[in-house]
Amino acid sequence: MGSDKLAVFLEVLIAILLPPLGVFLRHGCCSMEFFICLLLTILGYIPGMIYAVYAIVAVDRERLREYYHPINN
Image 1 (tube, rainbow, N blue to C red):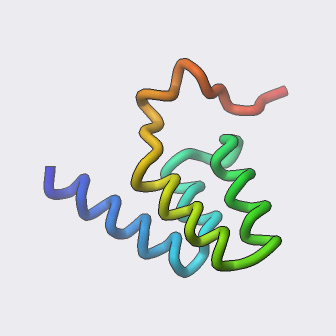
Image 2: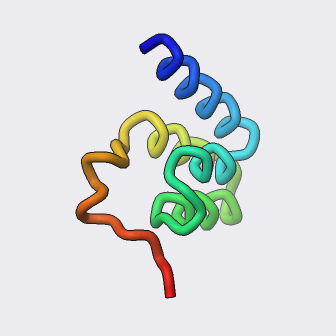
């Protein structure tokens, strides 16, 4: 349980420095969260950072697994 909190802390720290990287570590490369974070970071660093922290802390990937599918061809 302590290692889970440490992992989230490190992901949030990485998300503050490089927002898309933090979301990539949590949700993967081909997820909708990653593409939204990438777009927001391109448009502005602060919106990308805010969304990255939100996506890491609030979005539970296990609960949404049945609704979200990776974009694969």
